[in-house]
Picture 1 (cartoon, one colour):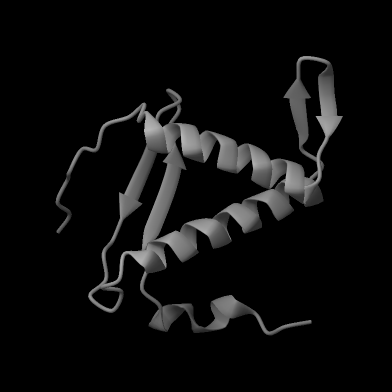
Picture 2 (cartoon, helix red, strand yellow):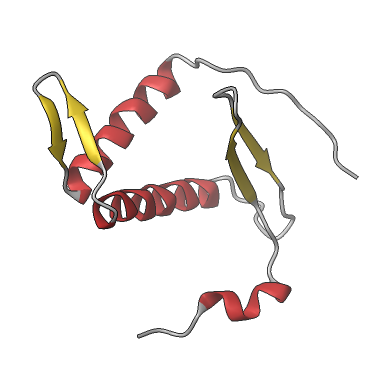
Length: 103
């Protein structure tokens, strides 16, 4: 078993919040860090997040609704679906960015 990664959280910088609002909207808050000037690092973060999400979905027994009804999924199934909609959203955005400054 590995050490708890949250033990050093007081020295960490929060970079991303994703919230689902009661009305169904998704709110994404990004805090840019001068220590991450390469936008490619965000690509790594997003891929790592996709893997964590897929693994968590399998661990929690989330089923995927298909035209043939619900089915259990593997992490690969979840990742494929994440990538499918990632690519569609990349090509045709369904949301706009609203810039808000926080104090």
